Image (cartoon, rainbow, N blue to C red; front, top):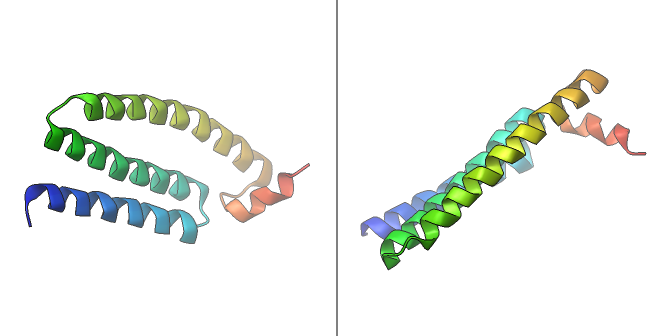
Length: 100
């Protein structure tokens, strides 16, 4: 198994672990961390393909993904904190009571 296949397998494993974490766990902050793990798996695969092709397009996409992820975290954490303040829990199932 060469280096490219190993990196792609690692990227797939990161994405799968993150997906399982989002599906199984109900803690809001853990779900956010698992989504970031999924994003890191995708970023690793983009960098691997960019390295294999020899161009910088994948690295530029990864940089863009990091900027979007930073904005997502900057917005998601305050929203989760407001929800915690309202429901007194980090359980995602309790947030369904907020539907209006």
